[in-house]
Picture 1 (cartoon, rainbow, N blue to C red):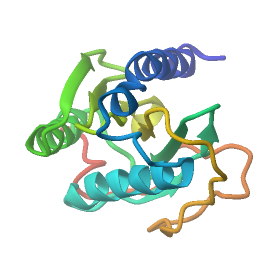
Picture 2 (cartoon, rainbow, N blue to C red):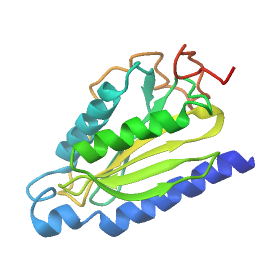
Picture 3 (tube, rainbow, N blue to C red):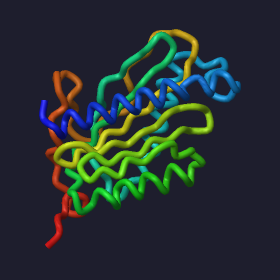
Picture 4 (tube, rainbow, N blue to C red):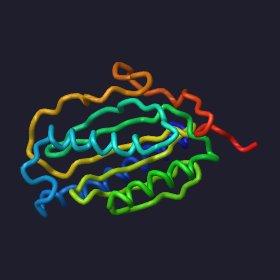
Length: 186
């Protein structure tokens, strides 16, 4: 495993730890998990992902990542297939950070690493949200639900706005050029 990929996995593992530590907040305080089942949590996660991706202008292309479930939680993921150049990563992260703050999310941590920057936040109803920029400028969004009532979880309804990698074993590196997001310093 290369160093960059190993760092992405370490950051994702940190996110999972942060989420598991705060994941029960919604259920304990009656705001998020109360009365919600895993399918409802998955739909809420999808809506959170839709909201942040709709906020990004110019638009980026994305695909679904794997959905995972625990004993009482759901994680939805989306990978950005548009190349985010090193010169544009700060703008991309800043745009997402401002949107999450405007949406009254609590910023839990910011990783300023040049190679693998990330933002970890939490919604008022206890959903953990994160943005991690990994190798080749690929951005990954993840939403972790609080502990909710066990149920089945259907695949997301939203269609990717670019190629779908639903049947692929691995999502490829970003491969969509954007005149804005992929621009490098001249």
